[in-house]
Image (tube, rainbow, N blue to C red; front, side):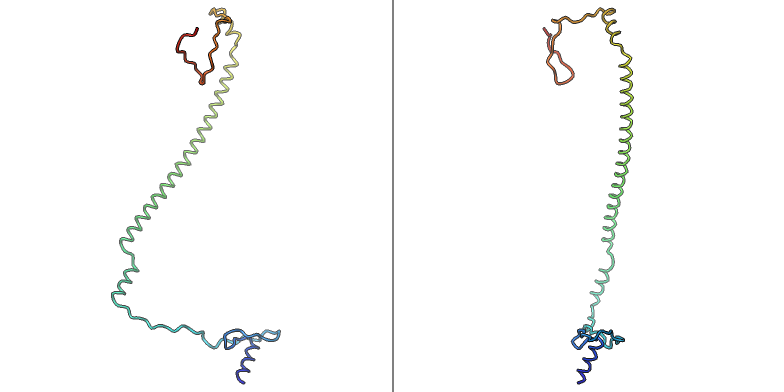
Length: 168
């Protein structure tokens, strides 16, 4: 009888039953208060501490500390890493500097090309071909070539034709 009364009370309050699951609470109203838990959760049984030998304790203490060889090798690795990082930063700075220098040289080259084209146009504009023709014919005694005097040479791949023997 007592078990049934307890089960009924736990259903009304929304408490856990003996099997550890929440029981269904009948009705639409929430309980006025939730009772505090009275039992502590079950813990695994504690094993008794084992006694450790003095040698084992010393070995464990020695393993916790850093060995001099480990510290030296760690410092060596960090030094190599730092030097490679510094070298990479140096190369990046040098690369940036060279890119800027290339950009300024390209700008200077474009300026010089433009000046060269302007000077060429000025020179070509100042040359009078009629004046050159008159001077060549009158002063230097040059004449136009006759039809038999012109020899056509086959087109070469480069700009120059090398003559290895006399032409007929």
